[in-house]
Image (cartoon, helix red, strand yellow):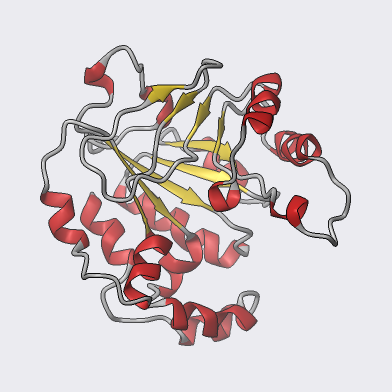
Length: 241
């Protein structure tokens, strides 16, 4: 099966060999507890495009087997540590949270935490659990991003652009940002793009649109009626290929 050789997986990176990442792109998907109907649309889109992609998993789904069986896809974990900052936490430890996901995707070497939560304490857990690569650091639209090793040897591959960040800027009056012109900019660095199944499904036009959809995230019929035909994340993803 032929694929776009500018688009790679995280596992393809050798930090000491610049040719493995310079000028390359990575498409990543933060599953974020999407229902199977919503997630399936993202999987089918990427399958049709015949493109490498990385899925950061938040929960068990019957679609995991389909992701694992695709030679172009790789899987990471997407632990949510936000509950640890909540007074109503269910008392899970950070290590419990990581291990619960590793039971779903054993032998996983890759992680991006929900809300990009990070700390040296979490690094100790990652290292002990066999995590070797992180994509947990946003460098919004920065030129010539380079992967780098933390002092503990874990590889960090920063994020270049993610759909919710673009929607945030659009909805909060930041200066205009043209995704399509950014794609045409030549770079000697690596560009990691982050997407979410719900935004690809809705082709979310702004954060108000997403907020309106939240009461219906498990109602696929209602979500179908809320899809946008304006330029949005699905168009951004297709433009990458």
